[in-house]
Image 1 (tube, rainbow, N blue to C red):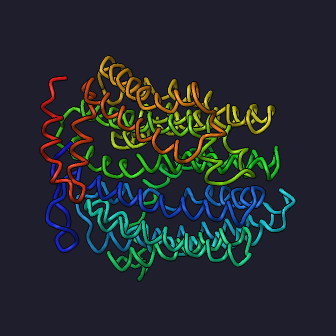
Image 2: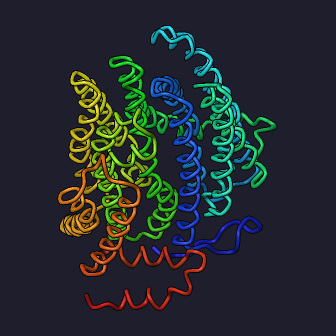
Image 3: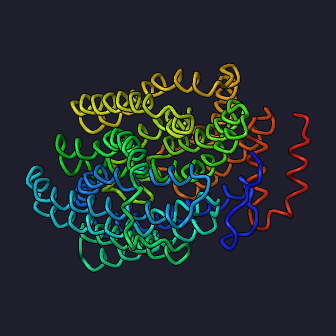
Length: 508
């Protein structure tokens, strides 16, 4: 996937390759992850207790279920337009504005019932502040979609990082001043404001004047995508609410921190790539070329990188939690071990939503996703009977079910080579084991996970990365060329060009 696409004149340099776009998208994810991660560690270690974090997680999860309406399919609708003129821009901005007010109103209206349901009066002001953040949503939705459509990921980088800086700074300062859980809520509002303002400065698309005529196609397309998002939101956002209700604030504090760490780490490696591949696959489709070979390259890239990363996070969960968050958060470690392993299943078939949408199979995707959500919630509620550890363990069972649900659907839809897929899984499994070997041997023959120091953990991880890379070269993993291609786009990577070429020519 090294094709070149033309971006809008005056916005970015004339051309940007998919690999180059991936570098900028990943850079934005890495930097914003680093900002959010560092601030969450400082806030959790020094200022907030697990029950306080758990209370905020319940409020945020409830708001995020409603926020399924926030994009209303506008991004994908804008991607699909052959061109975006002033009329289409005004209509999309109008739809974004109307739905942002709807979301804010629904979240605000649910604040008191949620506080009453959980017997937590402090939940009401938290949700009201979160509701306020969605009033700024229309300032960012359309500009971000236009930037992604033009593959202008340098600008997307600025928006993402700016929002993360605003959220981290506000949250950290207010937590230090004793605002408790409210610090996290105000940080969420600051992120919404910053995202909208920065996006408008880079790519102005104000939702004014309103243009209601001609919005029916947008609403029609968005309604089906919203149904899909509703099922996805229920599956991903209700766990904190369920754990909080059934097991209490301490349990949800541990559970939400484990899920957050796992999600952040996975997003660090993969979250931005989907936004690059979706328009790239659209171009392949439009040329009438088969999608199967390109899809297998994506699978190879995801599993070669994310499998070792998530398995490593699972193996190092105890020392990571102890070193970062301190003794009072050690209840997160066993949950993080289980939840991280779940990601191995969930990335084995990437773009499971994007590809059906791209190929016009949205109704079937909604049916599969709804069934997937029912399974997820049902298994979680069953797992809660064995406490918070049982809740986390249910995620692994859910991961197995998830693969069973989507495997044949995507195979028939995309037409990839099943034997080729299995070969990729086998090679990714080998490089994953190679990456885990150093830390596993330390645990087995030297020191346990709760006693290992940072000075021992870092060299073990570094050795694991070295063995992973060696294994990638030795078995000629199909993702090797694409990974080298992305690395070659990094600033200053030109000096490593002879090394990259030597690796490519290696006969191993």
